[in-house]
Image (cartoon, rainbow, N blue to C red; front, side):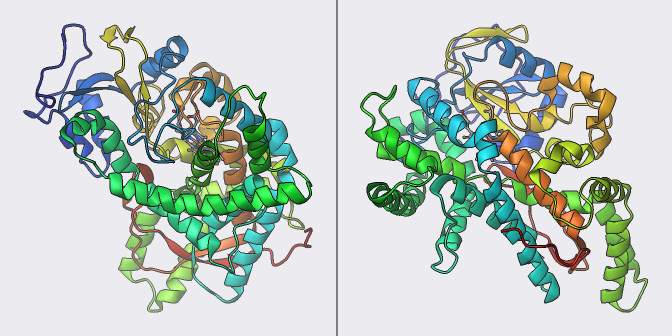
Length: 512
Ligand code: HEM
């Protein structure tokens, strides 16, 4: 009955594409690239669609104009994400900052997070931390370059972001010697892989609960408890430190103080603190993008493959080196970026965060990369009350799925949407961008939009800037596989590209 009962009156609902008996549109979710399947049905059936997974309704939003309407007119109404997949879990339950409903707890945490880590002043205070980590990232690459070692950029970039955020939130790096760093990175990767299951569990939780089926509960609880162990040790370390002496506060200190504060606006618990860290540690979005930026576009790769397969030279090594040098040094994007960097940053020092406002082309590359390959292509919100949108009625408690990927490739709003054109974010086109701001949704929008976007731009800008400023890149494999995949719900490359860095500028004075 739970599964098969008919949804309520459907006269005023948005249109619905053909569905399967019983399962409704479930098959669309089973596709390996869900965002693309959704994009396809939206282009055939319309920008606002009503979907049904068994009897659970979903509304799919795939146009900038509807996104504009919902985020402008119904922002508070859509400021919760819906039922968490399991309550007992520290991270996937309602104590998580990401999944918490819009209310006092979420407001209190958001205020703390903005004031202490993600707001402009907090970002300014932690600048030295990131500068040190960027330098370390550079030296690690340089060392590998000297040994002609292959680098998996994804892994190196993850070290950079993981160590920077670790220092910002717990006051120290994740120890590499005792395997702590590796353990945390492993947990991050595992939890990303789980995000698709989290989506299913969220969607089907209610009917399955009634049937007593614990969908993926064991896997989620397993990751939760392993994360819990790591975070508990961080917490204990901090509590001991707080008792002894107190020098410079990090986010963990602030949260522990708030936990003890009897007069705080909201009484947070140990679990709240841990679950906030889970979201913070899961910022894995850098990986794939850097690779795409460096090599510019798919076409570049495809040309490269053709040339390789054509066998220009007998020595693969020489071909690769020559071609890569040509590709990396000559494509217009890389050339223009290097020109900009050489004139603003020069060659005698490493790029710094404070250079970013003077590097508009670098920033445009970052934005364009995030437009074409949004790491979070779909995000969900739940309607508190029923309302009209796009001329249709959507009932209370319906979950909206916003397809940022489709919106940012909508030919009605973007010229040549499938082409990599950083120039679209430059100069006089600024006004147009401001006006249609909701066609750009890489970081979501409204009050539940990503509070880490400024920090993310800094990570991406400085990391990509450094990699282009200081190295040329050589690909090791002859055949480059460009397949995209969703790792969990995160857009990434199916086969991480490995390459060899070749130093452009050999050494900078060490600052830290
Ligand atoms: C390229 C990097 C990043 C991308 C593409 C990204 C994207 C997103 C998206 C799409 C959402 C959901 C927004 C919505 O529902 O409207 C989100 C939420 C969130 N992001 Fe990010 N993010 C990035 C980096 C970061 C960083 C660096 C942090 C913090 C260190 C962060 C912390 C968060 C948090 C805490 C939320 C939940 C906000 C809430 O529920 O109120 N993100 N992010």
